[in-house]
Image (tube, rainbow, N blue to C red; front, side):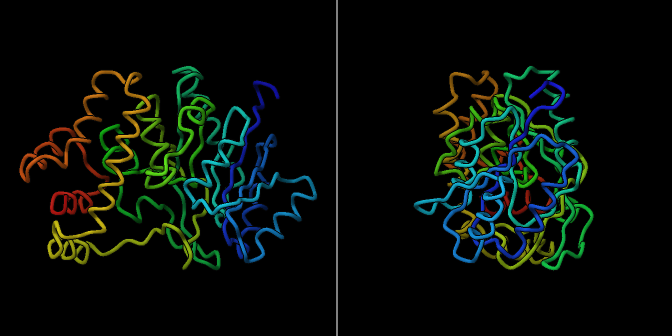
Amino acid sequence: MTNAMPKVTVAMATYNGATHLREQLASIYAQTHPSLDVLVCDDGSTDGTLELLEEYAAQGRLTLHRGGQKLGPALNFGRAMALAETEYVALCDQDDIWDRDKIERCLRQMRSVDEAVGKQTPVLVYTDARTIDASGRETCSSLYKHLRRDPTQNGFSRLLAGNIVWGCTTFMNRALVDAALPIPACAPMHDSWLAIVAGALGVVSYLAEPTLKYRQHSTNVFGATRPSTKRKLVKALRSGLKSEEYRQRTIARRAQTVELLERFGNKLNAEKRALVQSYIDLMELGFWSRRRTILAKHFLRHSLMDNLELLVRI
């Protein structure tokens, strides 16, 4: 491995993904960056996924690790990251289709940041994506525009309040992999945890280009469905503080932030440590104090509707 051609691990987590897996693997093997290790952690598939992966493993095209106890997507991705040994790691879903130069473009962005801040600084690069339906037909040219979310709003306070990083586009340097592991069980998802660790200790960098086709189908763990503005606002106003689902998501984000402080409190600068503590304390405040703090500290989400919902429900 030379400095000009660093090896990248493609870390994939699979679970019952046989339907689209072969097409995704083909897009990985077609990458313009040739120096790749493909590492797959399966989480107990029962639909033919393992048989397909064993076929590729027998050909020496990937390394397969079978799961024991079912971990779920976040911890299974954490397991795949822990097994990666290369300088850079790209996370990969089982059912998307990568652009041929996805790794090349992400690596170019990563190395420009590395040069500015040093390789010992954790860096996360994420990108836009196009959306396709189950049959592969393109449905939108920009995932973020479809969701009406601003992917450039990736300041640390916003990352604490809500994730803007899509795990399937995530590209990391070794410093971030080493810092972020193990993924805590309390994390809402692996990408949310990776984003706040990178935001706390290093750099979160957005590449404003789609690098893959994000497939939407009935078995997505998280989809890209955009509720209408009217329906979302009516739902928020009707349920208000009584929304148990919203409350649980807020509790999970708070637990993740507590974990961040416990692990990295002594590495945070004074400003970030104060932001972390303010977010942890947020739910202890009264109704109006909580909302004043959200606005003052910029504990905001990434769209107007998300922020209106936040201020109604939090």
